[in-house]
Amino acid sequence: MKEFVISEVKAETAVLVGLITQEQNEAKTAEYLDELEFLADTAGAVSVKRFTQKVAAPNQTTYVGKGKLEEIRNYIKNEEDNENDIGMVIFDDELSPRQIRNIEKELKVKILDRTSLILDIFAMRAQTANAKTQVELAQYRYMLPRLQRLWTHLERQGGGSGSGGGKGSVGLRGPGETQLEMDRRIILQRISLLKQRLTEIDKQKTTQRKKRGRLIRVALVGYTNVGKSTIMNMLAKSEVFAENKLFATLDTTVRKVVIENLPFLLADTVGFIRKLPTDLVDSFKSTLDEVREADLLVHVVDISHPDFEEQIHVVENTLKDLDAAEKPSIIVFNKIDAYSWVEKEEDDLTPATKENITLDELKKTWMAKLNDECMFISAKQKINIEELRERLYRKVKELHVQKYPYNDFLYATEEDT
Image (cartoon, rainbow, N blue to C red; front, top):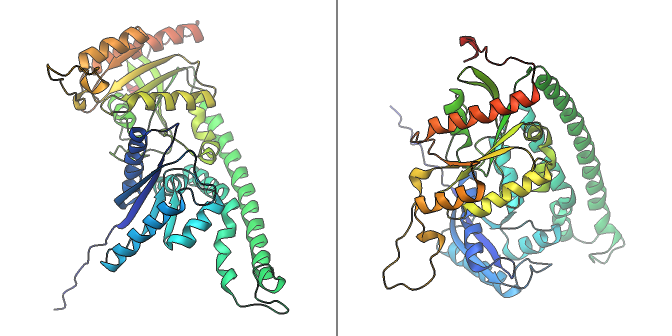
């Protein structure tokens, strides 16, 4: 009997590149590269090396300086000599078409920037027709100004008729430009079609929202991978996909929740992230309408993350962009079971940092800052969940009375649950 040996598929290896600038110090760059590594892992790549450079601003032609680019190239070549091929180099900012062309020419491997990596993950995670359409639109918008680099192989063709083989000659340049313009037209037509399709989907979703009746709408918002879907599953007793990966949820899921005979709608939304591509925000506007139309926002924060305060600012700024910053909100600090701190030595006279603050001390700080509008839970370990239910009940009831003063909401039946 013939034996079949299934060989293990080797994950693609990646090198990460980031900059240290006046606006972004070394510690901040390290945190951003940690997140970039998590993004790469979510996309199925293994990060094997990091390169950073201190600069006043990104190089307009190669992002990093020529010396650093040469250092990266030498590292890739040495790894190839040791039979450890580097599959790609990922940069922590969005690169211009010119930068991508120059870097590819120098390094001769696949080049990704933060935006293209996030788009890859979104494409991988998209399940419904709505999400797939939104991701495809964002991909085409990203691709359009970068079409030129897809045709750089034409530069290596021999001289055409009447040309001396020069780069600017008509014989060499013509076919590339013709194909480039053709591709540009096709992509513009596709973008127009996708926009029409999203408009139709948006109309359908608007009709669906209108049919939901006189119920208060609550939206879970927050940075990606903070536990929104886990909270959704717990409150709604549903089976929303939850995973310890970035952007596990792309489509907005809406469920009816009943607490003490008070029904309301709870929406789980796509997570936000630093440097979220503008094209993605624009493409996902119909999904984010659940945030715009919500009566109450529940801002979920991963308190165990070392940089959770910046994540809060990222979410707040994104909410401002969506004109949703002024909505009533509750901030829920999740994952208190994973919170860790380091006790200072007695002879350590340096000022205490956030790593030296106990959870109890942190609670007092934030509760004083936000009064009654914050709480601390662990959705995974079900810690303080009853307090969360009570807080939601009180806020939803208050909003319901304001919005529907003549509507009796205290008649939820067992069917509603």
